Image (cartoon, rainbow over the protein chains, first blue to last red):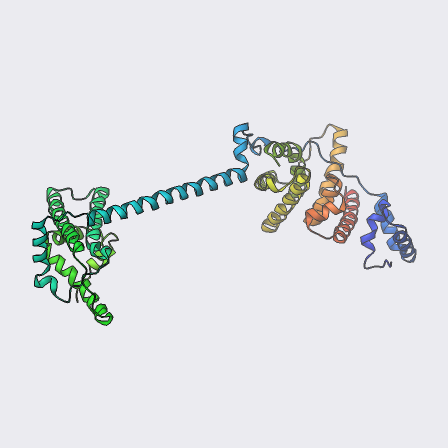
Length: 271
Length: 161
């Protein structure tokens, strides 16, 4: 290897401390022989070197603020963050699965119970005659009103109304707004209307399904049907409409469409 | 490392870190800030630092924290107070110590740090390279030049006295 003016400083300290290998020492001696000024500089450095000693009077006097409290053995277990974290995650997943399972099965039971309730309408002969008379009235026989064989869709308005009422009442309770007798009376009146609507819906579901019109007519009729059905319902059950208007006016939102608990199509108009 | 090991590092190395930083900065309040920052960083990273590597980790953090502070403040080292006259032996000792401190003040921050790590704390060249994040060749060149400058400064100060 070659030692020259550009790299001799790398080897100088090791030369003074005797840490050079045989080849490095030979190269260094050869270089210093050719450069006596540098040799004198390095030799003087070793001769005049002052040993630095640590000053024992310099101590850090505030160790207590750096120290951390040592936990008890019980808590030490929890300081193993990985184990605690994994345990928490497993417990959370198990709880979610359990809750989901409970919710799923209870929903299944609820659906079955709702269907059973709806279909379990004991029709006396008198009621059956009334039902046939009602079924053959011009209002029900008009093509604009389709009877969908799917019972779920038939009960949708009642379910929505029921949901609406319960959410409105819950909202009132939470916000402690307007607990006047008027509001309470409106709820009672509307409840009667909802009950009658639900019973009528159950009767309609008990009727044999009518054949659906062709697809093209169905789509346009469905459009008209939804708005017409709602309007017909609004006209038929003015107490429910009055209740809805009552609460919508008292919503804390400037734009009633922002009321999350009011289904949007209730707020739509035919315009 | 455990909490007990961390606390042991505090008791064992806080003086050395304090001394190293104080020799560089010569300001107690700044030195204490650097020491606290250093040990706080060790506390945060304690699970990733083993107990036997803690000393070099502490000096590395302290060194870089100090360099950052110097760059921000463009710090100039101050001299220690001179004791009252009367104790000749103490005076002689203090004069030599003061001479060295004054000479160290003429070095650049990196040169001074490397000299202190090597001669005060006894680190070898490889450890100093890790702490300062310089190459081994750079460390040896810096140290050689720092010693040359220290020697020249001491000689000139002695002549002035």
